[in-house]
Length: 314
Image 1 (cartoon, one colour):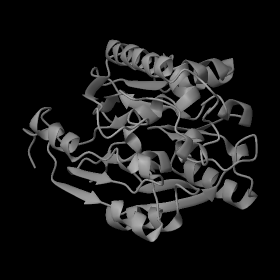
Image 2 (cartoon, one colour; image 1 turned 135 degrees about the horizontal axis):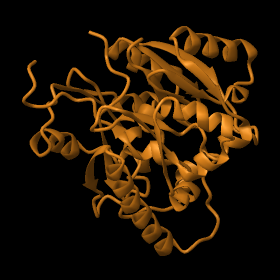
Image 3 (cartoon, one colour; image 1 turned 180 degrees about the vertical axis):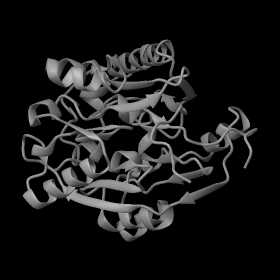
Image 4 (spheres, helix red, strand yellow; image 1 turned 90 degrees about the horizontal axis):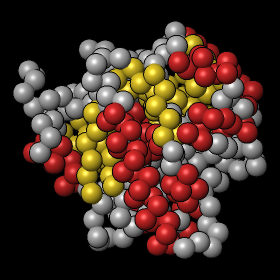
């Protein structure tokens, strides 16, 4: 059965201890670790999160919100798409995170709550976390940008996205991998694929210039075009403003929305905006604190919920 590309709901986690994480900064070129008032940053992140949820729900996007825990202390808890993904057959996958501080984010209680409290059906959990012991990593839909109907997993290789980690996901879920290498404007490795690529239902948003190897670049472009999607490209300068960190979802009225940050939306030119608007209503959300000190944007804050409803036929 062909899988849908767009989720009709997203799961989010309200941060409690948000802040810059020195452990993850080593592999995240987008993260600011300068001196700052940690409490002020944490409070600002909570405010931004709450406003984001209101904006998503006002746009007709079903949002399942959970609370972060007092313990263990997780500065990046508001990025759940890295440790968990859901799939229409009732599968939940949990992932091996590169840094120990982020592996603590994995929460079975939230997987259970999706079924017990929110009416979704979880049939099985595929736990890939054990790959960490062999030094292999793949951080959910940060590392993997999925073309679900065509069963293709795009993966920019990095310390957080290793070939063996990608292969393990593809083998268990029945995907073909499209692996490549990417760098941002400063020349540093791109840590997560979803800052340079977003695959929607009928479009793909790509920073082609971030793929320095011409054969790898052409392979990715050809694959995206072969899927029948319109290719919307953006520059390295726009990459640094989270232009690729967008997510197309289906609203409660059945129409598509494109969620991205205000930072990303304002970096697009008029032609790029018109191209995106042809594929759905943009929902720009202002989260400058989370972007600056977390090194991720709004797409990273949303774990797509593809699980079947508990009362749906098997």
